[in-house]
Image (cartoon, rainbow, N blue to C red; front, side):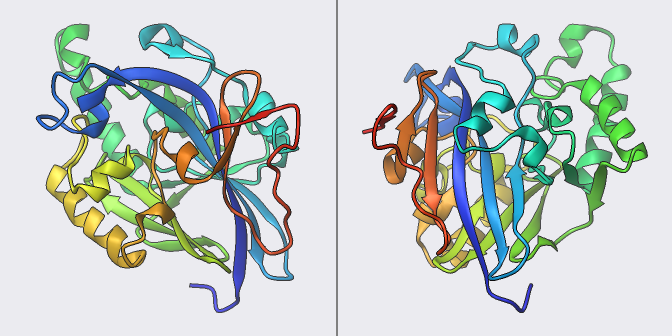
Length: 299
């Protein structure tokens, strides 16, 4: 952990929306037979660093490309990184770091759209998916491989291998401070083989970006894991206990992977596309970006 005081502005940027079974995100049994819910596809933008020091501009996760995933699942309102970042006066070229929570398609699939970004991926995650692809290749049909590839694009493994060779992707091995006041924490065999979450130290206290270890605030607040995952649900329950301990029970300081509720817990506004920008924390030197006109506040 950095010995210096750090401060970050944190934004949740919605780039797409999709309809999913409610028990997929909220949990089987308690939400079975409840139909469809709207889910947000999000990046988390963090801007800051050591107080008075160098400014860092980073994303947690980077979304997916405008390709066959839009047909495979009921997604709408997809926006490019150029469009999404323009809402906060940035360009894809401004992103210096992408902190990859895990390698599912909707969290890592569009990394090449950020040409200057260094990616950080847990080694356990990369090895796990490499072994999963090998397992899938031993199965007889696409139908038998379908669950393994239900949220993972095997071509992303090829692209990631090139990123490693080019020096764009670096491996994280366990817990590590990747930026001043931003620490990666390994959640081995939780949502995926090597998911990682990020604790961000600000002058207003800590925040946690949970990736898909938490789809919805409800998962932690009710201690009930989602209905879909590719890891160990009991490890998620133990992780939820850790989150509550780290945040002293204030689960509002948690940033879930896909929850539309985040728009209601923080100042949020909607662009013409229908996607939202949510202002989660402001460092001391930053003013609010919430619009006075031209865009509507989300109520």
